[in-house]
Each structure stands twice: as structure tokens, then as C-alpha cells.
Image 1 (cartoon, helix red, strand yellow):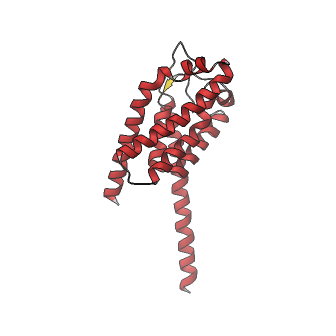
Image 2: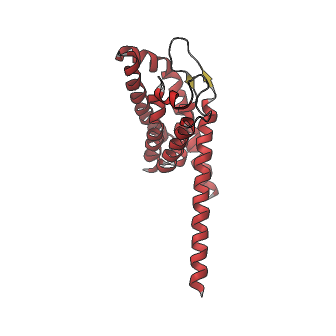
Length: 192
């Protein structure tokens, strides 16, 4: 008789676990959407300065590879179906995914997964988080610039549009995301 109760509790705890994970993934996708609303269009490039990348890094660093990937995949689905989650200076919907910033957007799930994967592989220090953020940003900009080459038909022009103007801001975003993620990890560990 104890077995059925045990199985029922196990099913209930698994359901609760999956409901919590789903809530975390949805919340993380909405956090990135909120970050996307902080946008500064730049007149000399079709790529705006935005906090989206910061949100992507923070989600990956704090949630890990699986939840980070899931949250950013959900974010892209939300945007593709027309929810106003992408930066307001863009085209919106699928058009934004296929527009000049599409290479950055489509890389977001991989960027979050990579940052999370690196954080999961060792001690959660600021240095590890910063390196994870830097490597994830390399993937992000490689994808974004590659995509821009198809629009400009020039690697040099794509780099001018999609990299030079953003380096300083990205360094700040990496450092901020690394600091917040490691602080969150320490606080989470202290309360566990």
C-alpha cells in the first residue's frame, strides 16, 4: 500500500519540478524581451545598440545550457509569431529574423547554451563567467556578421555595421552579466 502513495508523490514532485522549469524558461524569455526594449538605434548601421545580448548572456550564465537554450528558443518563437519581444526599432516578427539582425537573433539559443555549458563545467567564478560570456559573444558576432555579409556583399562593410560600434558596450555587458551571475550563484549557494 505504501508503494502507490510513493509513486503518486513522485509523479507530483516531477510535475511540480517541470512546472517550475517551464515558469523559469518563460520568465527568462520575457526578461530578454524586456532587455530588448532598451534600444538605441544608430544612424550609421542597421544594427541597433540594445541590452538583448546582456539578457542572453545572463540567462545562459545563470540558468545553464539546457534552460538557457530553451528560454532563447522560446524567445525566438515568441518573436516569430508576432509578439513584441524583439527590439522596437526592428521590423518585428519573422521579418526581423530574416532582416539585418537575424544572424544575431538566430544565434541566441546557441549563445546562451554555450555560456551556460562553460559555467556548468567548473567552479562558478567571475573569471569563468567572463570567459564564458566572451566566448559566447564570439559565436554571437560571428553569426551576426556572417548574416550581414549576405546583406552587404562585403565582409568589411558587415564588420563596420555589426562589430566596431559595439565592442565597448559588449565588454561592459559581459562584465556586468558575469558579475551578476556569479553574485547570484554565491547567494543561491549560501541559501541552499
